[in-house]
Length: 378
Image 1 (cartoon, rainbow, N blue to C red):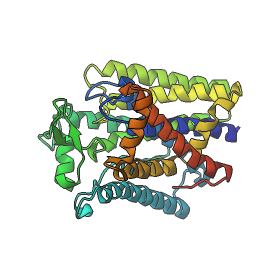
Image 2 (cartoon, helix red, strand yellow):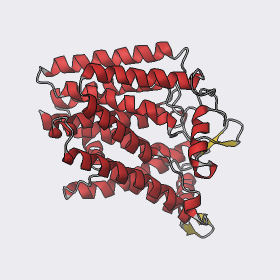
Image 3 (cartoon, rainbow, N blue to C red):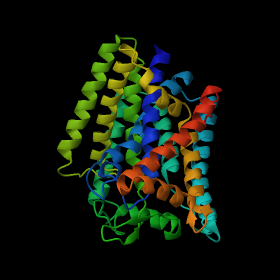
């Protein structure tokens, strides 16, 4: 049953990776179907679920991975933890550096973005693993997760005893998240977030402070992984995860009246709601794949899920190259988009088809690795 569970997990991981690549690579940012856009600020769209789902899945996977070390500190555990954290963080820096170099930015290291998707995964993985192995007792881990989310809520609301800051639910440079990143890294190393009026401010949606609740997200995923690994009957395990998922959803939606759902600050209610959805999707896929044995439909996602971070990095490199390689006076990306539009003159549909074709090209790469049973561990 262990391998079957991992098949379900691979397929769920593959679904999220496909989603991450799709929403990051439209044919044009000006014409995108609403579900494929992030919420401008407060709120939730299907696109906003993709990254937190991957964070949750990382927590589930950690339950299986840490069992090899019997959830104890050891030399092997420390080496793996540090190595993977450093590699993930450096790969995130590489993607930023590569984009700057390809677009002709002089002195790219002076403008490299310190934070990002892979950097957030690295930090959440590192601190989540340390807490899981160091604390071990599920009840204490649950309390720590609650304290992280409650403390982060206080910081966002501006009632910190130590800092007279806050503005956590304002899209402004006075937001405590922006202030923290600007103080630590400087504006030259931050992402510039778009404002509704078309302006831009220095605000990183993968900020350092907003990585705190991601640790709780990983721990919740870890709890679900532990339930999957129990020796009890499979239906009982799925019922437990379903109850947890429904409870998280209910709590998140109820508390959102005072603490809005917001991906860009990764609000505590955002953690609860997205973990709730992810838990229920995990239950559905486990039921569909492990119990009903409906597996053929998930083959493409399984292929993506076996080399997820590798293909995410490859997709980032390819996207940059498509933007900088020119054909005549247009970039290769613009040329492909225009060619599709000449056949289907609907900007939104053309943008979607471009994204799907981009996914298809990346699928060929990861499928080749899969056929050769090459799984690149990061």
